Length: 137
Image 1: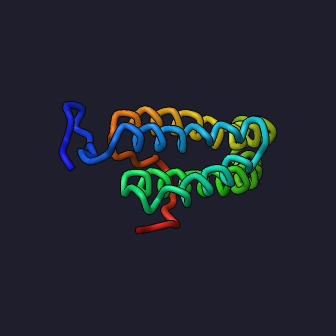
Image 2 (image 1 turned 135 degrees about the vertical axis):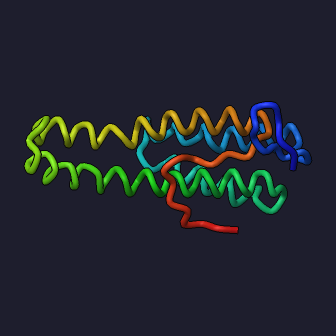
Image 3 (image 1 turned 90 degrees about the vertical axis):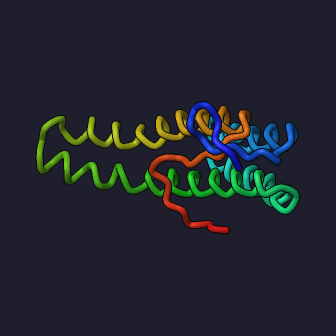
């Protein structure tokens, strides 16, 4: 592993096919927009099919799975937490607080997936922000 001009770690032994597959693993998560939770199943299948073939694919797949699990948790927990916070502080009101809390995981997911796909395509190792790492090596 080496470091590129952007200061990111790059997996030198990843092939162009590995980088393309890792990019697609991150982008398949956009299927959630069409059919909820289909994306995590598609990612799980893609990751399990190729994780033994390449450490690069295994790392990106594990990171994407951890991120998706984290987003699912955030999408349920944040709106629930927003109700008492909105009532307690009454700054923006309960309804806008719940809406913002519900949109946050989608915005985080969209931005994170695009950043991860670009990094995977460049051969970089990527870590999603705000991710609970349930799956390890």
